[in-house]
Each structure stands twice: as structure tokens, then as C-alpha cells.
Length: 368
Image (cartoon, rainbow, N blue to C red):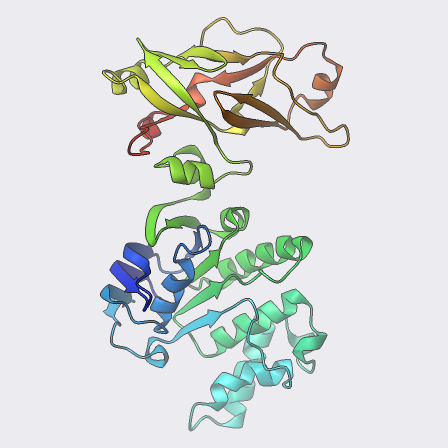
């Protein structure tokens, strides 16, 4: 097993596109780090540079504290699994697992057989050793692909959109299986996906990438609660954080639907500036039984339209103002809401994020 570190890595392709732009990333030994970002942000290039399939134009790649820029993919001993799993369709599970060892000169058939049986037991594949990939479930194919990484004693595992070809239910089941298996094996793993829900579900930590740079690396909870900037705040969350203009004067934030008094710490941090972009997580909007009088909450007016589906215990409320749509999700108080004549929804000042409109920086990140 091994830690992985990329330092100021630049990768430019022939058409002049800079896929990685001074990217810095550290993966701890034995952790599962999910890498997420929009299409074309460079996340798959990160894996290819680590594996040695692409050479960086600048920067350093370290595996187990060893500089590997000049090492071949074989010398790096990194296993990479794509969405196709790259299993040999004409070989049985046993032969697929054994295949990496057959390429090593001098290994006896007995040594190979013992290794295959050990990995098979570890991954619960004993019952399917005689089957071919076409006769396996998605989860079984995933385990066979991971088994080929284990049997060659790879130092780290790279997963590139491993669930992209599966339906929603299969993705849900297999991402849980991957996370559990990785925890059991303790293998350093990078998991690339464009699906932020998937990333938040499997990762010990999550790296958010955009335009070839890592914008933030944190635990899933910290990414939601303490986003560094507007991009991370808007990209992470389902539904994502919603934004609106805010005017802050004398410790009071004036939103398009009301105003809230900020904490003394936030007011002091914002002193001397007035214009911000306010961010509200939908899950922080609350349904209250009585009106609040402490001015820590801004009430969303009842004339703002919303639609409540009657067949689910979770609802989304749409409201628009200042030209910026917003969505509120609440998992509590749903039966009561259906019976109410009027609804009292509130935004809490403590959960309000304020961003610099020019830099996008979350200026209240460590105060929320």
C-alpha cells in the first residue's frame, strides 16, 4: 500500500488544452479518495498521470514517497479499473484472476493456484470461479476486477467511473459494496466519478476538481457544511446550495424575501463591505410551528409558490426571487404541512453562507 502525491502537475494535450493546471493532490495511505467534478475538468487525466499512461508536462508524481515521473506503468505497480472492468470475456473467473500472474516468469502453477484461491476467498468469489464474465452480476464483475489488482499486489487502485454503465439501483448497491470492500482491504484507492452523490457516498474524503485544479479536499460532511467557494457550494449537495444577492449593513443581511441578524462574529468579519452572494442549503430551511421573534430567522412569505407531492415523505419547495430560483427540501413535518392553512418556512442566519461576489470565496466559511 502507498500514499500518492501530485505536486504542481501540468498536463497539456496537443490541441493546446491544459487538462491539469498546476494540480496538487495528496491521497493518504489506505484511504478511499473520491475525485469529482464536471465533464472535462481533468479528473480522469489525474488517474492516467498517476498510472503512467500520460506523462505530465511539469510537476511531480510520488507513490510511497518515491518520485515516479520516469517510471513505466509496470514499474509503478498501480491497478486501474475502468467502467468496462477490462475482463477477458473468453476466460473464466479463475483464469481472469490468474492472468496477471501468468505474465510473471518463474511462477509455478501451484503458486498461482494458491494466490487465486486466497483472493477468491477474500472477495467471496469461490462459487463463480468457473463462470465467464457474461454470466456474472455487476457486483461479481466488479469484485473480479478488484481481485486482479489484489493478486498482483498492486500498491494502489484507480477506479475510473466504475459504475457508469449501470442502472440506478445497481449503482446504489455496488457503490456501497465497493466502499465496504475497500475498508476491509485497506487499499489506497482513487475513485473518479462525475456523480457527486456517488462521490459523497463512497469517499473517506472527496476532492472537487474544476478546470484542472483541485478546489477543495475534505470529508463529505465538511464539503457540505464548509465549502471554500461558490463553485464547491453549488456543485456539492442534492439539491445544491441556492444563491441570491444579499446586502449586509450593521450586522443585518437583507435577502430578497426578508432579513436576518447575523452573529457578532460574522458581522465583524464583514465590516466595511455590503454586497455579497448569500447561499442557503435547502436542508437548512425549516418548517416552524410558531413565528420566531429573535431575528435569527427570515420567514419565507406564504405567497411564494411551491408544489408538494402527496406520495413521498420528502418534498421540494420552489421559490424564486431576485431572478435566482431556490429549492427547499425538508424531511420533517411533512404530514403537518399537508394539513396547514399557511406555512411558516424560515432561513436560519447561522446556516447562511456569504460569498465574495468577485472572488467567489466563502467569507464566512469558518464561522457557520
